[in-house]
Image (cartoon, rainbow, N blue to C red; front, side):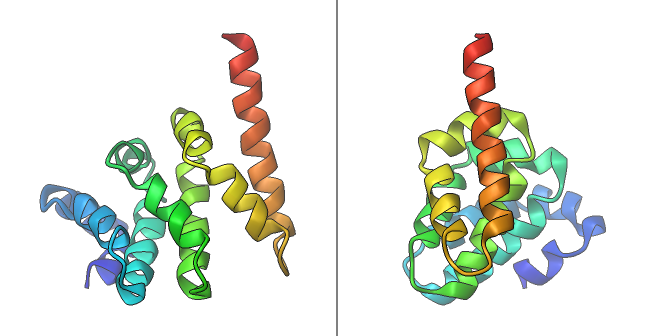
Amino acid sequence: FLALLSEYQECHRRLQEANALESAVALISLVDEECQYYGAFALALLAKNKSFQVPLAKMGGVRPLVSIMASKHSDARHWAALALLKLADNFNNHITIAEEGGISALLAIGNGEGGVTVANLAKRAFDDVKQKWRKS
């Protein structure tokens, strides 16, 4: 249900008010593959909302996404990678993603079949992080 509602931008404000962002992070943190799948699906859709990108990362959404990307469940991995890439759209999340192993996880998927686009996006995010560190 959460994953389906997450698809509609007009529901996002109500989902946020109902603590659905926290619920999605909790869902992907569970061991159950089906929960991880629907949680990653919901997070990928919620992370398209630019105002949710930093809060989702601060709620601890990055680490379980990285863990899912190391799993054998390819459908959940797909949604986890998309969610992680959407979180990486916000520059404020780059350090967290790097610290949690997100760049390596994206590159590992990028080395698999059809992952050239993911690898290029991960490399771009990594280059952005390096550039920010050099400026500071």
